[in-house]
Image (tube, rainbow, N blue to C red; front, top):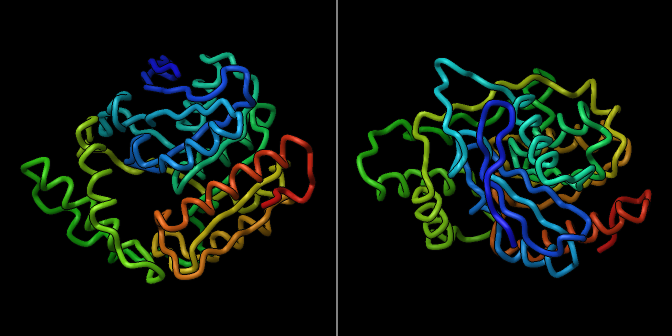
Length: 281
């Protein structure tokens, strides 16, 4: 295991490597506003146990990486994709399997489009091809109350837990303790309350140019990126497979982490063998 900092694209990014140094690289790209602590431990352990070289990093504006003054230096998904490639460059990784959640899935798509030689496969979890009038709009009510005053670390944790509850689906009872423990640890790393969502554009008409095996995992009750966002991804990317989670929202419920681990390790293994069917469970 190794950890450190990468200077790239005028930002400094914290990263961590786990698993075999000579293993096939898997780069984990977390969603907006969330540090590496939101990656389920069981998923990390599953990838490491399967022999992979797992790399995760804090996106810009998050955790131990550079926090951005949005007013003077706004950024977009393309900048974040360049950040991800910069991590690969710094670690001497020619190409990796990319696993992205939410905004991280958008970053992974742009990396595959703009740096196709650096991406061996994609896993897109609770993600979207970007803002587009052809897609169902998200439910803005889930953001209600998130602008309330925050004075203590406990207030920050409460805010995060409330958001997690708002975007969760109906399939499982909400596990407040699970999310609160992550939120508390996440904020202790260094939350940037002024962080903004990166600018993004639609990639629907470019998806056919993504030629790597792609696994799309999405909940039918996702209020941020409704289910048709996943259908468009799976239909637009030639070598894509869609796995549907009934009753799941914009989340990776702890009850489904074992399944997610099997899906991703199977997909990465199959992609590494050149299996055109995408993955085996």
